[in-house]
Length: 156
Length: 301
Ligand code: FES
Ligand code: FES
Image (cartoon, rainbow over all chains, first blue to last red; front, side, top):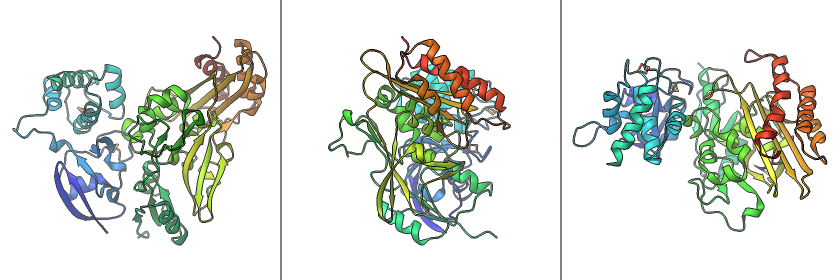
């Protein structure tokens, strides 16, 4: 076991993790943050996407020990302090970009990482940023629309 | 129960080297994306992972001062010297570098096509090279520019041309107690054109059926001064097609000459059947893609 300290959604946490644990299992099981999902466990579906030090990563492939000292954001941290939804959450609902919802936390976090860095993406850039997030329900069109709409929203 | 895995995070190259030489079965990792999949699927059981991610000054693109990856070590490096990539530079760093896009388009294309954005944010160029998959995109791109590897080991640093680094699938000339530190790419010179084509069944998040790169440097009279043709998945390792390069060098570049280079590259490619694609198809596509990348590089106009 190794003791690691990192920040999750603004809160510092310290805990013991097994050397072969991935960040996803630490979030899901130890911290009871169930937003990030395990789909494939191999970096292919994006359901486990979280943001580490400002960039989207697949937490199933991210060694938990490597999170030590870093800043992690998960979908649970998106809700604004006022209690209202983050613009991305709002537009995902409004545009029908959520059906079963399994891909949604990962989709939203990939989109957030994109918008944090490039507030003005075009459709192609959104598609590239989300290419690692598989959705079996929506057909993607609504998701891309929702991200572009959120970008507009966030500029206001 | 399998022996427990250890996860170590040295803070310097020297510390990493001493861990690698004292712990048997220790493996250096940077992004660890590929190694982690191997461990999870039990294909692979190293005793310890030595993470290179926390070593300062292993992640930079010099002299591109604009990138996040730049960490202030530009002294003495100018645009004329080519580029120096820290081994822990991620594919995403290269993708975001407008400078790489302008000066080393084939490397930029190769790195931008690896995995998903989430994977590119973590997976490193050094890792892609040391992992030595026959399809390693960044290696196929870098072979075009005569990249040299700077390798650190117990006896100090040594340099090795990338074209001599690979031995077989997953096998390289990196010693067990060595790490790849930097990738040096010389200035390709004026009138250099290059392109990389990753041949896939779908547009993204896919391993290549084939990777094909070409680079030509023309002299002032428009003759091919230097040519490089590199291939992924056409041998047990990323390779150059020396035969195709010979066809091009010293000649006036025309569409016919490019087509001939494609014929020769195809005839000499060591393609094989895999579940991803058949050998005959790969060979046929080398013939088609070599002239296509030469055309896409802009060298023919
Ligand atoms: S669970 Fe991580 S990418 Fe699929
Ligand atoms: S909403 Fe069901 S997988 Fe995307």
